[in-house]
Image 1 (cartoon, helix red, strand yellow):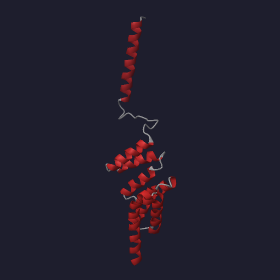
Image 2: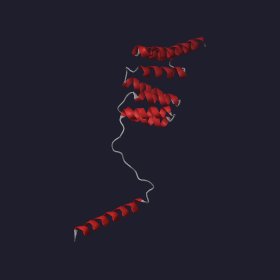
Image 3: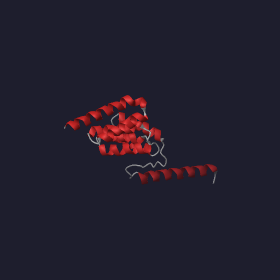
Image 4: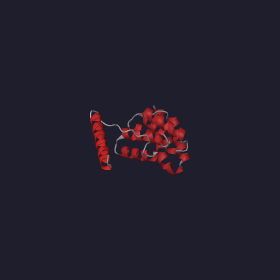
Length: 162
């Protein structure tokens, strides 16, 4: 058999193989692609989550933050914020607490948990303590944290009057 005939036979075999493969898989509603390695870094998942959150796509943001949280503990703070926006306060509290546990030096987690308590009008003593801790950890944001503290103290004062 000549080289040309061998090439033609190989090409014919390949085309028949492709055609049969397409016939077999044509009945499938869709092909599934399995990704064995996540192509995005945790930082990219975090940034994508921020973009989704900015666009109001909170479920998509939460998914990206969960993926980021495997390597970036700060993502728990972002997850808390998403659940807070969704008024899923128990979940928000869980994620804020997890953020504090994983990164005890991150002041925003303390302040956001305090703000959650302020919003819910509960655990105000704990909220006050958390806000003071946030101010101690990050004096550069003291003015922002002081706002939370003042609102908590005002609520405590109202509760005493009732």
